[in-house]
Image 1 (cartoon, rainbow, N blue to C red):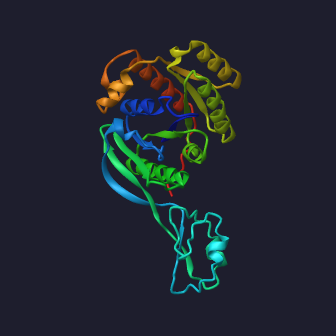
Image 2 (cartoon, rainbow, N blue to C red):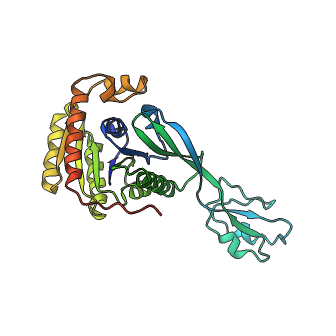
Image 3 (cartoon, helix red, strand yellow):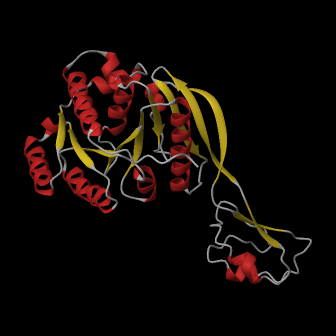
Length: 296
């Protein structure tokens, strides 16, 4: 069993379009959407939710007013101004740091678990999908990504799936670090824009630091072939293989309106490019040692 993660240094590179097409072409795979802040893989795979698990993010403070002696130490110590003059804690402002609990003279403040989102296990036409959603204004998305990955691994082990395909979040922050942890291969999707080139370098620094094997796909390469050439030159200098160059094509928008993937929608130059890219990715995965750990 192996795990492929599809990531990008910035949003809008076509990462989810590629991941959905991979899911349609894969056999015996579990699909995971780890872009929990803005999930959209479900728009293409039409999952049917089979199970829901509550996700508990950061603990939040609560005051027992019956125990409180109104010393206001908690309000004075709170750097986030989350406690008003009536000693009511605004849960949307509270950062869960626990300082108020520490300074309370009467043990009237407790840190309690709050539901911050949910993890879903769903059925799709291409296998089991694990995805999640944060509630509005909630944080700890890195922790939620870890919950998605743990559930995906558990399902893969139970069903003896051969592969986990993970749609990761953009950028280089905590959710990305949680996504690539334990992966066998990272496919980095970039575009031939100045921001795409810059963010590709940043995300490669992350994969290299955590020793995750990485390969690159240049999406919409023909909108600026000069920059696409610079990306290839940069990757060659870093010893990173460019395994695919996909042309710009309107079919992703058309396929999304039909709630399907590009490779299922209609045969065209992009769908053929995606099939060739998938073959290269499978070849790269076959060369990697298994690093998947059992689910806890």
